[in-house]
Length: 134
Image 1: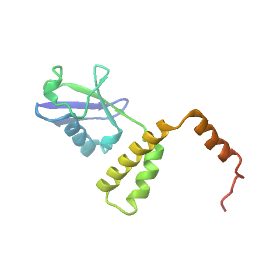
Image 2: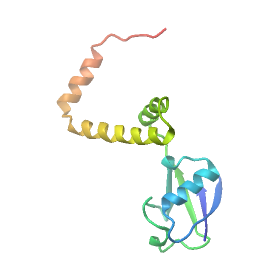
Image 3: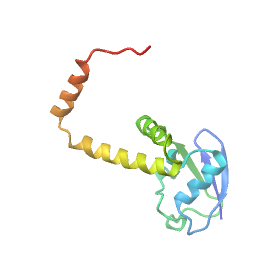
Image 4: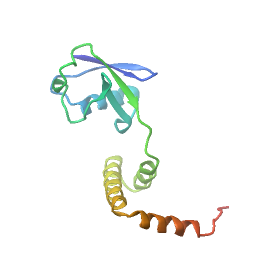
């Protein structure tokens, strides 16, 4: 079946999928056609986000000729910096996996901090002299 994916306030493309194709498969085709990385894509139908692991068949409203909306998410700046650092030494797939693991660990550790911990860390940075680079 053919599905049209329209970027919110942008271009559109038509991709061919089967009922057993996942939303992630759909996103990969959109990436090939529109050059929008899968990580930045959020596919919507009737205002609801479609889940990567679900199949086309799991959404009963998706039929041949359906038009879905694609919202391009802004990249996470921290994640981008970490990815670029890993990319210097690893291939893209390895870098993505390492970045995802790093972010997951970082978020886990941040959740363990108390407000007092965060205040101490911020206070430590505020008391350090500002260093200007040449």
